[in-house]
Length: 58
Image 1 (cartoon, one colour):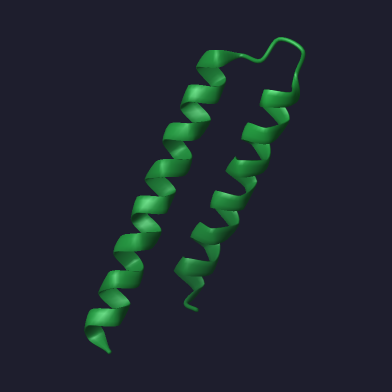
Image 2: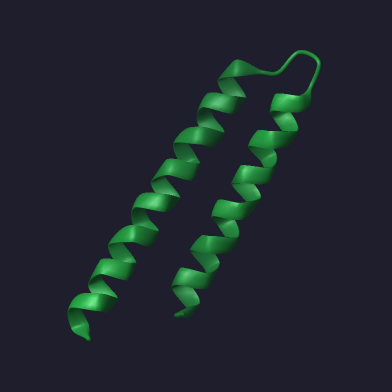
């Protein structure tokens, strides 16, 4: 796994944990949840693009 892929995977995991933590709040902030989910999806898309690029190069 490349350093970029590892970094993106770590970011994805931390965003996932932040989403879980916010969701467990008594009154979750829906705007914060929306932003976190959008960021998580963007990271996932970048990770997927990076993996495709690596597979095409191989």
